[in-house]
Length: 413
Image (tube, rainbow, N blue to C red; front, side, top):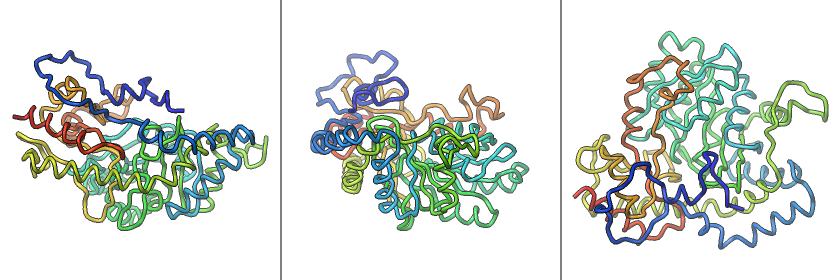
């Protein structure tokens, strides 16, 4: 069920081993145990029988598209997040588009988001017919900077902005207190890109219940993961939820009666059944991720590698959990000004790592028409040169973490 999981045409083992494009120098190798970036088999083994039984029930009932497997997952997901409505769909990308379209975002509108995220954060805006407008990020959290957003809204582009799309990057909520005030004061829709943040909280409210709507991804590397592509939109607005359900199946409220041009974005029964099983475990898995992150903090501090500045000099900058936030540590991302060399060093020692994200969105070839250039967003551009995600998953062992930290200490010595 988890053999093919990457939309970029890599296998899980490729992500775990994190292949480096350049050829590493053999002299860098040291004696250490291999440490995967991610090992889904460790999650699968304890619950494999539950998963197989859940899939078998879908085969027996033949409810392959929507149906009770999807409805049951939606009900329990909504309850867990504290929202009125949860609408399953075919991917996190479709979830973003559905959230914008259901909220009424249309051609002529502008939507503000971050330049430091996965491509879908911008492509979904274009797919809704709207114009993406970017604002820079905070160097401490990598999330959209509220002050940069306020400056943009006060400028000439602000008049066409109809929505804000902050991303809860790496599993930590964006500064929702400030975004909520800006949205309320200016009459803007607030759409959460919560693709990496199932279970994260801001001042006790879970991601997914903060904005007008929120989009989740259940891509197999996410903390709550399907065995393929799947997504969800959450909202407390009954009218918006009804529109979401209509848009996800070709604009139909009644079969073969199309009120709008929607999309085929339905969640299938197999993925819903798998997610429903995993929903029971996600809170404990998130707690385990938090424990792994805390252990990293302790190990790096003991090794004397952590620096306190937002920007690295000779050591590394550790990720931080900001006040008011409950981080679920989808990724543990350090900063170093020798990122590429460090990644090569780790690869030689068979330690996984990954770069999320090496090219800011405003510098993507496909988005040149947005009109931005090198230097438009210096914080996002610097982050793209310095960030490195280290292995983190609930089952990661303490000795494996020690191996990672020792290797980084060796590199920096």
